[in-house]
Image 1 (cartoon, helix red, strand yellow):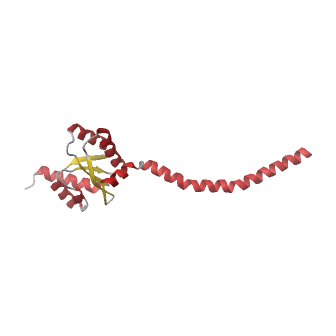
Image 2: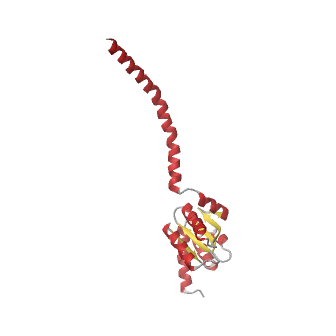
Image 3: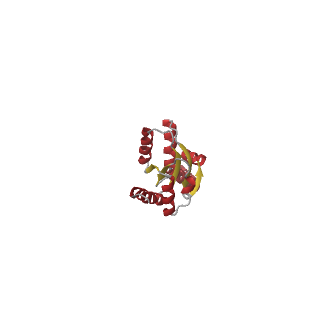
Amino acid sequence: MPTKAKEQTVTDLTEVLQRAKVVIATDYSGMSVNQMTELRRALREQGAEYRVIKNRLALLAAERAGNDLVPQLLEGITGMAFGYDDPVSIAKTIDEFIKSSRATLKVRNAVVDGKIVDASQVAALASMPPREILIARLLGQLNSPVTRLVYALNGPVQGLAMVLQRRAEQISSAS
């Protein structure tokens, strides 16, 4: 018979799984409480959260949420980072935490936008620039051909205007 606390955990986790755009599964064995608190704080600043969940409860929540990918993330002791916005920032935060704290945290795999990715793909995701920079680069590249076209079309007109102005100056100085 499940306890009320476990039922509440499954209900909460079901809601989290329905909202999350990225779920990163990690092996947190060997981490201290202070490191775990630091990781949770760093993820919270990015609008994400980190939870240690019993696999059986995670399976029940995934089943209720209709998510058939999350059970593939569960093996051994599992901590999960749930991100609701930009997957890159969550992966980057975890990667920076591992490098800066030298924690024993290991990324196993993740679900990103409905697809399972392995640890190397999560690391590649973490090495990408933030979303805002990617958008700025894209807009710059989209704007570049238009700017070049304006300069190309403006060149002959500007040259003609210069020739006419010089000719007008010659006529006025000759008179």
